[in-house]
Image 1 (cartoon, rainbow over the protein chains, first blue to last red):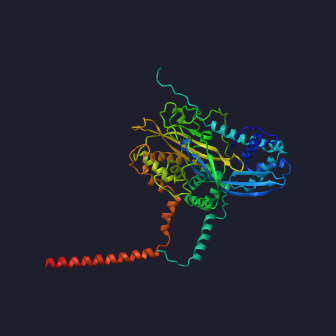
Image 2 (cartoon, helix red, strand yellow):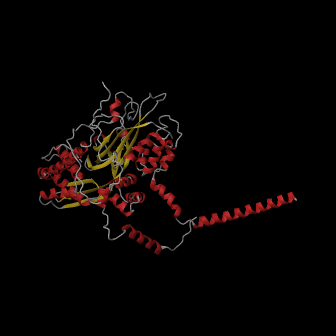
Image 3 (cartoon, each protein chain N blue to C red):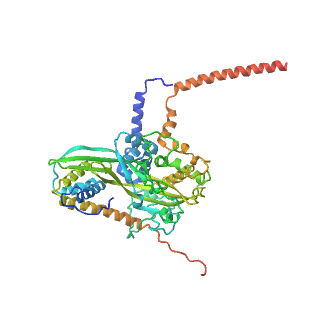
Length: 163
Length: 374
């Protein structure tokens, strides 16, 4: 679940806004189910051929916590992560990292990241992929919060005695 | 002593086929799916992930199915699977303060900011078996209401300005926390005494039953620490990792965790004024019992650091940590059923000889007694 600012970059600016736009895209791709990503990719029209550079492969990431929730780091335990790196015919590289074992999702996400990095279709990807996936994740987050809120205790005080 | 013995291949192969048959059970009953386990036996799946120390719900559910519901066997399967995978790296520490919490309660402050949010809890249920659940009745969606969006303040922060509760500090002059934990027990063998970060790693994967019993023992007086459940929260936290090829960090998705802040009495020492100290529990998935037990045991194991007498099992680091891993424990206990024919023959021979000597001696002293009597 992610709540990144929805700042959509449109120009070719790999360091400034560009990196932020790419991060927003990659974050939301990782948090989204493969079926939703595939539907968004479909809305983009066909994706270009992407050659695998690395993976897709599944490995481990050690998830860390903080002692006391706010202190020094400790190793909580590992999680499975699947990653992929692809190259488009024009040379743009895209990476994907996400929890789980879904290799098809990793390849598709990496292709979308490469296409975004290539630069000429950023606005299109932001509108057809990033924005709807962000909205879907935000919707889920709101729903969880609303369900939790319904279980919040509203205390009232029982007055006993005369005064 | 081990001697190579051949034979048993056919018996083993057939035993495994029989296992597969019994696992499937009555063929007229539909086979259970991994999705069903993930969705409907979620807390069992969570326990397997926590104690296998691997967050992977579908794989944990598959392990539960393969193990026929034997949790420790399922944990063993998932541990074995993780050894086949490369390590890509380590995440940034998850920020439990930014959790999308389904539940957050405090037993120390009724009106803490964010309130008492009960979430999907067994608490306050009547523990009466529900025959309706035996069927497949319609279940209405969870009720929802507008969230006030008030952040869930940590209990430790409420008292922080008064310095009445211990704060996490890296060093005397508020030095920054170290970037990396002091070690990783999946990479290096256990060594005692242990740093607290390593202890927490061991406890996070420790057996729930063992930690529960130890936590309970501290409440019953074996190294008591006067605990209050300062705060318990459960929900999803985002896992973020620095990716060198990108030059920035990416979010990998969210994991569900349960966190417990135990607040404990502390009389103070010559160096430290009286204040509340803290025990900490953090566990993969939804497992309040485990998080609470972990926090109790974490606090108990800080006896040395806080200058308390070590008098009870829950305060003995080597005892607790060496016996908390159920895969290790089951391996050593269950290895006893493997063939020990030669060992036993050797011991049998020894006992026979000792018995012979014993009887020889008994006869000797009987004769001596008889002679003395005559």
